[in-house]
Image (cartoon, rainbow over all chains, first blue to last red; front, side):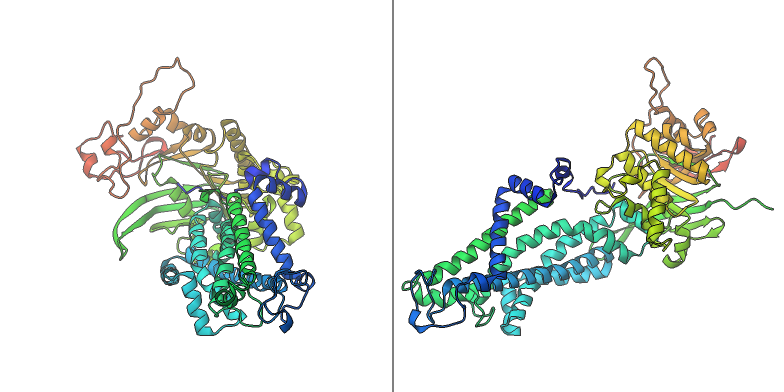
Length: 300
Length: 323
């Protein structure tokens, strides 16, 4: 007997009429069903909008220094105070959202692209290819995310692109594992056999029939990874290996002020820290809801 | 003019699956899924293969379609040997033979719409452009009793019977001569089973289709098959016309199978031949006749000598030393 893979997680919801009233109807239905997930989505969308429209949201230029306002406390002019060089903390956090999300989303995307390619090929081709690639993945997985990213940035040197690569690479193992195991069970499904009986090439079967059915767990995993990539970026920047000056990065804003100004100007520590916590909290809430929605098998 | 060659001719087909164990993938044995099966199927003929789970009946169907590579034996399609053709060389023959599966849920890709599923074989073989393909798909929908208006629906929006009709439409898309039906109605309600079977019979009459009908349900087989092959542990033990087989089973295994068919009449008393024990392992099948450990009439000879499938009276074939 073949293993029954619950392929259509949304069938029950569709029958309940959840998908009947257009985009906003759907959104409302899902928000009512997953209030925490909706809160997470709102937090994430809020930060994404901040990042996209940073020039309009931020009241000042995040890079303009002003000695007069060095270490200014929060006031009507500087809502979250100003740093040592008199740069507006609020404007820097808004611009920092752009950097954080850009790094997080591109690293997650890059990791997903490579992870999916390796996982799909590994699961579908099997044999020696599978064996070799899974051992490479084992090695990658044996190092913690941050250590791995540290080594890579240290080797490549700090820059925006290198930070993205350094964060993306350690994501590949978990993605490729998930895609590989899904591919292994999908490969045996009768609809794959039907495509073979029709004379379809294996390559096309993998792309047309296997890949689309692995997307649900991939989305779940990617949402969950988004939060940890934001944290990794912040940690790397905190250690001085992340996004270099003058780009405002939450992690570096934190590290620059943590040691020296935590007593004299605590707002320089509190607000970037709050921003990091809030966005990670939001992505985690969304990730949990996604898992419940798309992948009931992993429900705890 | 001589008779046309049979649509499908299988000679001494064998499929042994290797069992590997340990780190070095050492070969420790074989599963003898199919162990020397021969038969031929004529035009517009239905041959049923029946037997218990694990007797190799599905493997026979998949091997004929070259979805599984045979270990030994030959497969001929309209007289052409296709046993060793490469993937590329197989392509024209793929158009002549198709398959319908048991599970109407797993046999359709849940992320594709019905018309894309049915039209996919046409696309693979580059038949017809987009517009012509849509017309052909609509026509196929009508032929299998689905409404063309449902073409853009996803599989989960159909019932089990309707999904099986989609499967049949997909199999028909390339105008095949031969279809392997692997338990096509086993997963359906009884009332839907009849509808799907009648559809298959109707298509056989209109298109001249030949079927290899794999089933464990003898009542269904009696309704649809012209001839029946009874399989036990990878071998055919009896091969006869449907009417003869049901009226007068020759092999003790066939007798036992027929005796197990439920009869919808509580007043009817039957002599029951209840089979003892389970099917032996196909990894280490019993020597001699595979059936001898469970056979009520087995003799010493059955334990050592393999009975051959030999033609008996009125053209039927039985593999038994005693019958």
